[in-house]
Length: 628
Image (cartoon, rainbow, N blue to C red; front, side):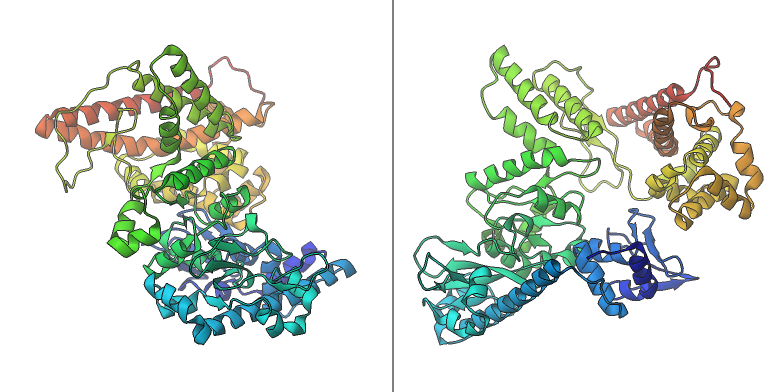
């Protein structure tokens, strides 16, 4: 099948984006656009916009951006080709013709899907009949309600070698064997794979049954039996309950991976619909990628016993090479001997929610594991710890994340073995329920100022204002390097609140990027000129007034210029926030004179000095030669 650009453009043109998104998100008209609270992250003030004329959506809060196809893949979780097929069907477009082999494969898959759907229906009917009495008793004992049972399509397979085979005989033995419903041993007659088991349908992202998990009723081994891999079912790429969890995870702003089917079912019944599970194996790279498509930091909540914690550590090691800025894992540790199912039934949903609110970061899990791996009494043992931590960090592919992990592990080693500088220890602790954010000490014992609350950048800009020279330099750099606009859309969006011409110009730059994602400097200048900013933009490009690499005409070191621009944006945004916090801390120190207020004021002063040093490092020396 060949999906040409022309076909995809026609598909987008025939799809009313606001109509598609409105099926799951409440939209409000805002001029020529629609707006809503973003479905990709939690927010109270709408920052998610849908533009039918331009055919894209964009969130100024989390930078989610895309067209109709991207909506289907990111919000619905569909594979690309499935998203295209569903949109084409709704738009009345015929999919491009397949070659004969692909057509035969698609027809065979269609038959397998129908066979699996009929099998799920048949198992469900058996559960509700006389044969399913014992299975229903098991569900009742575990607290699974009839409503939950129906929602997950639970069923029962009678203890027989041929009842399912007979019920689905119209499909033929060959297809039922290919679907994993029958077992074929050499030349013997095929027979039912699942016998005397509680049946749990496994569905794909579109909600179609592709496999089954069977739990034994009574005694017997194995306790759980899964379908074999088939043309429909790839165990390492499938997550149980993904079809139901996607929407719940978008709303909750998190995705939870647990160990087994019954954990997922129990959590969903307790109100945690965002839970999924791997299928009897450790989390694979493909499953981790699927989780990261839904949330930047998935929560892994495996059983509290030794086996569960080893599985969590294996997942941590497997995730390391794939880490990226903002993309990690966090771990929820259950009391020893309990699984999520046990916990919510014994102590209620609130107990589980409490654990979810305080997950353990990936770096903490790795550190604790290696520190506990062996004694650290001798120089050789301490050197072994350093080597193991270094080897873990060096598996990370992303250079920036790797560097941060290496630095973090070095600092933790220094503090752990008493080599680091002694930090000031405040004697007073903040009062419970205090309304003033006081900060805290991190894992290395270093005091940290309070994390900026939502909107801190905007308030900082309002209180302290942008550094006008730096802001002009950044704007000049963005005109020189327009590809960087999209990378910093969220930050730039927060600067629209800046007063005067700077704020208006930042807003114009954002609109330029939204209008055309494939920009060069010429296009930027043309669009800004049409918006009345032609003279301002021209003035910004005068290289002799702005001492930064990224404001000069493109030279040999384009990479350095872009890196400097990224650093300048970070400093520009941080400065007003730190300045406003420092002013507040200075006032607090003058009021109460406490050691804690002093520590906060000193830390913020140090932060301000560091920002000034970072800015100074970006400025070019007078004798640096750049060709204009």
